[in-house]
Length: 277
Image (cartoon, rainbow, N blue to C red; front, side, top):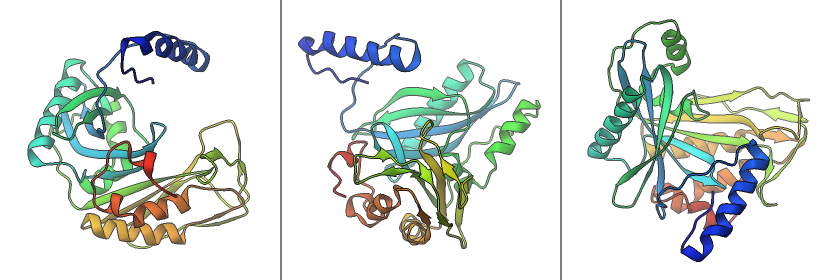
């Protein structure tokens, strides 16, 4: 992605983005879109069946990210209002209906400070952050995907969030060294537990993290009645999560849970640009 502020910058940005895309994906096709300054990244989970019915399953806020990669996701969004959820949900359903979407998917939006929202993309799959939606609507999205593939119709009910859920993506990276990947062997592993604490992971003590793939090694998810309680529970769980042998993003995420900027819920996708470790 490149941001262009004036005509003089356009050609350089266009050429460098094309070269990077061609090298990374073997496809240098480009498109232009409106740049929304200091937006929030809010996405709507949807489900569609083979009979033309589409519903939405509430939203997730994925604004805490670095280099366009998400670090923390939560549901519901602290920025959301009933009116905005209705409008964004309707837009997501309209998009899914227009393409005859079958399965579980996500319609992603950027939302500006005035709560104007802009379509960004659709992910036609289960996403990393799907557990926070599962926790606040008490619905198994993986089971839903399997049922839809089997031709079982959905009820068409739109889901509203109950309680609050937060997910931290635990990456094998060094947040104190420009998030440099930290492959290696996990020597000690202790996962947190307790009511409302969930860990999705494949790792174990002795597991070797290779340097060839995405650095995420676990997802830590909590559920509580309120956002404040969820933050407190996540802070405790992060402090109990021990991964020795490699560097991880856990120390950073502990500081994020402690920061007034995150706790206030008043942040944008630019939050990490100025956050001090």
